[in-house]
Image 1: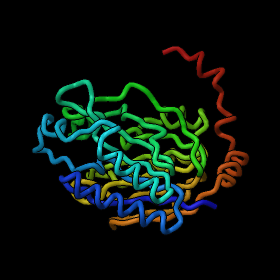
Image 2 (image 1 turned 90 degrees about the vertical axis):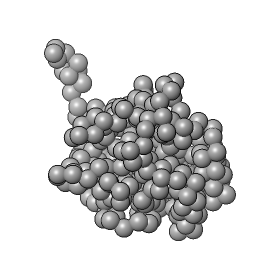
Image 3 (image 1 turned 30 degrees about the vertical axis):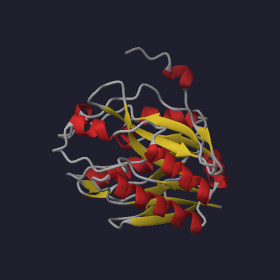
Image 4 (image 1 turned 135 degrees about the vertical axis):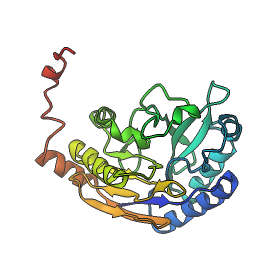
Length: 269
């Protein structure tokens, strides 16, 4: 068994205040024996609706900037892998990428993913401030297993998790800032469990809490069992995960093997 950590917290509008909390959480996760620590979407700073696209763009950084560099330094000091998120500068003057990154336990950023599905739904319009990524990042080998990276709204598009799982993902790590609303928590729990069940993988979904967000950070096992539900509490959740559990479930319920891709490809729209 291997321990992983999820962090659920309420982001401040001040990214420097958030950075202090983030590095403290990294240290605490490592001290509790976790090999990977995953943070929610928009952990860099909370973006109120009154904030203009230009103001957000001015706060954004490059992946090589101070924000990620300090997190990478903390990962190295604590010998732990970290999945985090930033507002990353994009080619557009007044829009930014919503980017997740994975830092190894030596402090090197080994993978990054720019959110491709922007949340233009249910009264929200992320595309006013965000610029979409253009590709799915390949799964990356970590000390806990193969990790595929998604972000929040990506969960509603099963094609993405299936592509990542077919490419070898054993864990889907999904930093999120799931907005409150009618049936939203029910959707959140149902979708996370479904992605785990249909792909026979762990789903690790740290979420923001407070402001306009639901909380309920989750870890789901490959058979759909909820291993962790952080409800509305800020803090760290620690969970034991196992590659043997993935192998067992995929052997007994071989959904990836039982696909009929020979027929799917013949379907004409």
